[in-house]
Image (cartoon, rainbow, N blue to C red):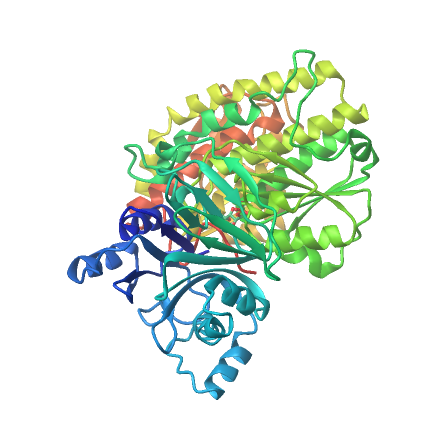
Amino acid sequence: MCGIVGYVGQQSALDVVMAGLGRLEYRGYDSAGVALVVDGKLATEKRAGKLANLQAALAEHPLGASGTGIGHTRWATHGAPNDRNAHPHVDCTRSVAVIHNGIIENFAALRAELEGRGHELVSDTDTETVAHLLEEEYPRSGNDLAEAMRRVSRRLDGAFTLLATHVDAPDVVVGARRNSPLVVGLGQGENFLASDVAAFIEHTRDALELGQDQVVELRSDSVVVTGFDGSPAEVREFHVDWDVSAAEKGGYDYFMLKEIAEQPAAIADTLLGRLESDGRLRLDEMRLSDDELREIDKIIIVACGTAFHAGLIAKYAIEHWTRIPCEVELSSEFRYRDPVLTRTTLVVAITQSGETMDTLMALRHAREQRARVLAICNTNGSTIPRESDAVLYTHAGPEVAVASTKGFLTQIVACYLVALYLGQIRGTKFGDEITSVVRDLRDMPDKVASVLETMEPVRALARELRDATSVLFIGRHVGYPIALEGALKLKELAYMHAEGFAAGELKHGPIALIEDGVPVFAVVPAAKGRSVLHDKLVSNLQEIRARGARTVVIAEEGDTAVEPYADQVIWIPSAPSLLQPLLSAIPLQVFACEMASARGHDVDQPRNLAKSVTVE
Ligand code: M6R
């Protein structure tokens, strides 16, 4: 949450920072602001609302030229999303400007202390305390902004990425990082700081990943990283394997549409290079040895939102293929129930961004209890993979739309690869069985592409149902998490009541919601004869239809048995049951996207949300 950008170099810092903020706006869009040092003075502008408001303000009041600048796009935590609380925040003397991502938990005590010493704080934010603390520490640090930042950082509790610029050091931006993302972009005669590489990808694909509790001093020709105690710090250099076109809409109206369309390639890329010619799987990012993995006797998946739904689906494959008991837990609940964890528990943290604070805290708790942690993540250089014992990257490319789509499908694929790998080394799956599943997985990109070609009736349905007040989703087995995911997509994008149920649960209460015309999407497991659950779901369809539901049935091509109970059928290609979610999810993504657009909502940036949830 919150996107931050810093730049030092020969280009116009304002242009670089504003372009970077444009790419980070998905992280938060409650307000935006920038600070430059121009002619020995701070030049700042900030505005509530989307970046466009800041752009308009800058057009009216230009800030002047500078090669050093910082910028922020906000997802509000402390203080209403208005101009006053927008970042940057400055000290009493307007010498230092600060932007921040995260939450400073002890800010109230710090604020009281600062006010007691005569500082005037004008916003309701936790961030502003940092500007005033820097004001005090800067002279005490021998006018060394990096040292002042280290001293201040040591006093802060919570999660923070901070960037600061000072009028006395017009060619420096200083950053600090604890529990929130911050990466360095390495240019030629220029350097960048940002929450995410997307902010500087048009300038450089070479980056440095900062570690926990580190301060970075950025100049045009140097990057110096130290720990909060001032000791030299180790950093990891990496090269970003996608380019600027991946972070642009490429002719689509929304990022979400582009990302839905990219799903065949995302799945193919996630599978690429994982299978040896002898049928053995290669997961070379695994830093856990096969012996350690053979000892595993319990798997717990932790994740949030859509990633949690991927985990719910993965559980079916993991238990089926490995015979290891698997639990799936919301990250935000996990550590508060005192889970039973041992050295032989494998905790799998699924996260697109790699920065979700609830998941980060869950994995830290797991590691404290000596469990091993495997991250499934889409973002190189992010915190969760770095803190895990092993990582398997999904290769979905950058996901910009707040609603996760290609991230979700590739998470399922990655979980399946882990399950197959565990099955392989533990002997619960033979090589030929693995080859056969991987062959089925390799067929999925084409099948996903063919589903994408038949989505016009789904879009038409969304437009027709745009005034519906509630939509329900039902499924069984892996179709149940898909029902949950369909409902989540609709809630977050269309702001309407939507709920997903296990179809067998309807009769235990939710069926009371059914009345004339209520739309119900039903995900039918495999075609008749291939799954015992098929007929059970068809019975559930009959029960709700008898009570007036308008049924929209997602079924395999040729499954004519569902037709009598469907007001509309959305056909998907036949696939093994465990792989069906990769197909059945798509109509629900498309439906939610079109519904949001039909209702006049911002598809890529739904209200109250942010892409990367870096607060608990
Ligand atoms: O980055 P993560 O995968 O950890 O994010 C988890 C959730 O915040 C995320 O999936 C969220 O639910 C999406 N907005 C759903 O579309």
